[in-house]
Amino acid sequence: MKLYDYELSGNCWKVRYLLNALGQRFDRQPINFHPGREHKSAWFIEQVNPLGQIPVLEDGGFLLRDAQAILVYLASAYDPSGRWYPAGARARGEIQLWLAVAEDITRSASAARLHDGFGFAHIDLEAARRSARALFRQLDDHLAERQQQGQRWLVAGERSTIADLACFPYVALAPEGGIALDEWPALRRWVWDFRHQPEFIGMPGILAPGL
Ligand SMILES: N[C@@H](CCC(=O)N[C@@H](CS)C(=O)NCC(=O)O)C(=O)O
Image (cartoon, rainbow, N blue to C red):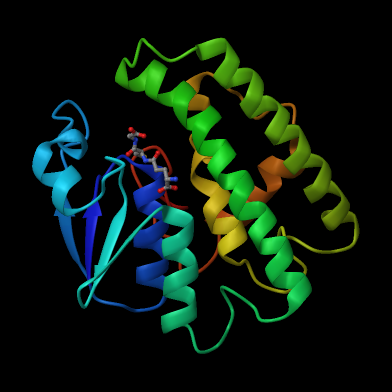
């Protein structure tokens, strides 16, 4: 498999994380997202992703864009245990809900980080932060309820799923966009729990425990 990848992208990290957790070997094709804007180059738009976005996965000639879609694909194809994308109508319905929230988190918390950390001045910072905070409150309320029931993850079960993985990076990286997590204790506990899983790998800005 080949991943069109950028080291500092939380969306690319999600895909690297699952590939690692599933023990899948893959090649990384680095895309110079910043400052090179290679994802908007003619070759990338023509040959890889007409939307000019990363990540994109290539598996035996099959090209798939969108981090959440790639997580569903990888878990369906390469996780016979069903841990990451559990079967069952309710679990799958709930997972889909959180995958949609993950996209909203990219549009808000990740945008604030791009503004502050990468100098993307065209982004409406206050609107991005406001939307991220509304989503984080929703996540915190949900996780607080789950934690009261003795559960740790977004979807009922003993182990994290692609729902948690999809939402995780831009929550953990939110302080880089000026969004502190102090107000949301259940969300902070979930970040801590996610980071302390045995398969955890970090990325710049999200260190693995002990580093
Ligand atoms: N829905 C896409 C969004 C991916 C996305 O926003 N990627 C960023 C890098 S992390 C990007 O390529 N941004 C350029 C753009 O949106 O034009 C996904 O989840 O993969």
